Image (cartoon, rainbow, N blue to C red; front, side, top):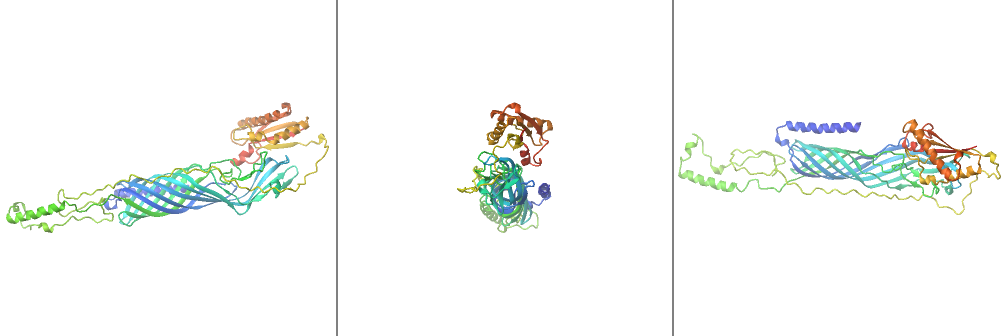
Length: 538
């Protein structure tokens, strides 16, 4: 709301100034029309505006601005222009939360809950963008040495460079085994470890937004002005290019779990939904007016006219009284040698392109020197660089510790030999496999060893029953989600039937949106609720 009010009042000020200018009759307050070039440097609040939705705390960053531009103004003070600018942005995030992934399977085919602890992890994000603003501008002279102006228009920005880097504190992975009520950590041989050094790059979309600026100019000479201004920009579209990634992605749901853990960064993860670049700052620079080459103020046509008057003077001496009939009495004759040149009103912008009318004490017809008002237009405008290529590949951070030849054995519960089948315990498997409004199971999850384990258990205990319950997020009506949950359960049933399980032993149900795993308060939580639960019971 504050941004909208700021834009409104600045725009109102510009139009009020234009209205006041039209009411003034003094032509000295009119700025020169024509072409201008400018160069400015600035800086201020330049941040990637995003929300962490309770996962952490974000602080804005600062950046700089460099721009060159071209303006063309009409006589009424309004004009158009285009710029080429380079703008740097920054932001910082601090995270202190735990991310849990249920239904993970370790190398011993044990089901556990994978946990990632972000202990006050600090991530610094930076990016440099090339911008091309096109807008409508206005300028007006307040007094002899002071002008005001401003502009508003559209802005397109492309990312030329970006980088993120973590500093201080750490990210730690742990495994919680519900069946043993045990949490394992600090065991690199089982990929439970911690690290604090990550860096990489993001993929961004081009930003399309708007800009507004306000300028105060001090006149150094008729062509050169010092410029001081305020600027603001905002990107309206979402600059984020990737979705539904974990901030630290161990790929724990795949068969080759923990082989290539990757830190995706906060801006590429499901922690952040939208990114809008925002800048507010001050700038200073110079503005130069382009004009045509100067000409002599007194044209050469004056010389022959002066010789003609001397000849007339001789004729008057030889023939006195010839022209006295048309002259009033008692009026002395004006000698042409006392000719007074035209008096030009002094103006700080006086040159060959002057708009100020000239007054003469002794006006003569057809003897006024012509002044070219319209400056030559430049054929070439500043070149606009093409869209920079985006880096598609992100460097992989090799965080996986080296495996030692001898790994310490983890003491688990002693294996029970010859355990009777009557002591079979009910087991529950949970998998998050579904995209929004989809019931098909992705290929990498369909080949997951979890379904093989379920099939083996079912074959070992022929009297056991399998119940598959489908769940959804809270988007849509209850009836739609009940139907979608049942389809998801039936998709899992098909995978078990292909593995040799009789369809008569499998029961499919749907809970729809009635039993969420986590509250449906964010897109990340909704993704966790789009799941199936497979229960093996007698």
